[in-house]
Length: 355
Image (cartoon, rainbow, N blue to C red; front, side, top):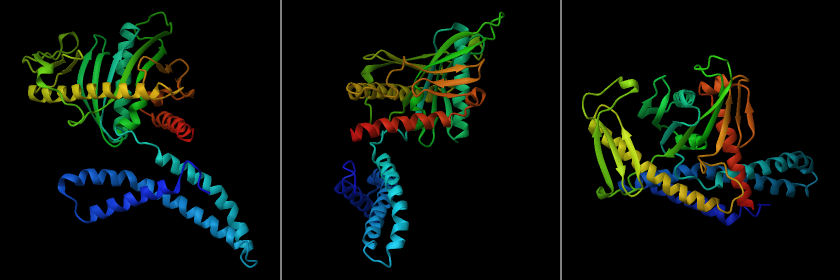
C-alpha cells in the first residue's frame, strides 16, 4: 500500500514527464532549449529509478500475496513475503528523499568568505587555518578553488578572504559551513601556555548567474587602486585592483588579481553573488518563520562549531556531533561532518513533508 505522502498519480506524473523529456532529447531539441531539458532530465533520472524500484517491490508483494492461495506456491510466497515487507519501507524512505524539493543552487559554484571574529591575531591565524582546511577539502574532491581577494595579517593570518570554488555539487556540500567557527587552543603568541578562545566567521554563497540578478550601471561605483599584501609586501605598482560599490545596498567588493579587466569581471560576479544571496536570505527567512528549527545557512551569527585543540575534538553544535579527529578535520577531512548535516537536514524536510 502506497503511503499518503506518495500518491500514485504524483509518481505517474513524474514518470510521464521523464518520458516526455527523453523523447524531446531523442528528437533533437532546439539548441536554445537543450541545456534546460538536459538539466531537468538529469535531475529526474534518479527519481524515476527510485519510483521504478519502489513500484516493482509493490507489484512483487501483490504477486506473493496472491501466491498464498496456491498450495504449491505458498511455501515460496511465505519465504518471499518477509523480504518484501522489510524492503518496501526502505524503498519508500529512499523515494521520499528523492522527492524532496531540490535547492536550485546546490549544483552551483560557491563563494566562501572568511573573516576573523573575536580574538585578535589568534582569530586571524585561525581564519587562515580554515582557508587551508577548505582548500584541502576542495582539492580532495577534485574541485577548483580560486582566491578572489586575500588580505593577510602581519603574522601570516587572514584579515579577510573570498575564494571561489567550482566543481560538482559544490554549494550542496559547503552550504552548512556558514556561521561562527570557534577555536580553543594555546596561541602561538601566548608564552604562558594558557588556552584562549577565539573565532572566525564563514559565509558560503551560491554563485549567481547573469539571469538571476540585473545590476543597472547607475547603481554601482567602480574605483581602481593599488593592490597590496601584508605589511606592504607584494605591492602592485599599477592600479589594477578593482573595488565596486553597490550604492543601493552599500555592498563593497574587491578583486586584486594582476589584470584590471579580470578584476572587473570577478568583482561584478562577486557582487551579483552577494545580491543573489540577499534575495535567498529573505526567502529563507520567510519560509523559516513558521519552522521550529532549521540547519541551513540562515543565521550566520550562530556559533555552529568548536575546534578544541588540546583535546583533539571537533563538535558541531547544531547536530551534537563530536569527532575526536581534529587533525584530520583541519587537513580537510570533512565528509563525515557534511554527510551528517545533510542527513539531518533531509530528516527535517521529511518530517515537514509528512507533517
